[in-house]
Length: 129
Image (cartoon, rainbow, N blue to C red; front, side):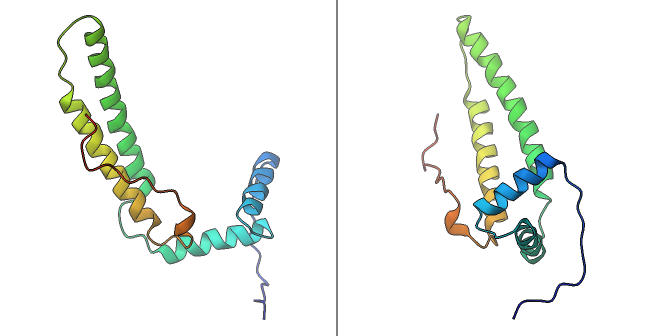
């Protein structure tokens, strides 16, 4: 028997947002955008995430990757000028950030109802540098 829903929750959206949300809901197999939003809210509520807020963690990782990328650009410039370049430290820092990001992604997907639909990328056991 369907749940009787007598309360209403309103969300304002631009016409472009509404079109995009309708498309995403349909692409995920939901009959209505409301059904999709309900499933998002329910899965967020049931996930019970107790760790650091993922967007904050991702911002921190993005900042660290930006610093490492800047260092890598400086090393590439030096190498192009014929200077001796030792980039193991920068590459190790990038590898640590990738491992931390992999951990966060695994943790954020732990309670996802459709784990099988997610892509996986297993990191090689050997360092890439």
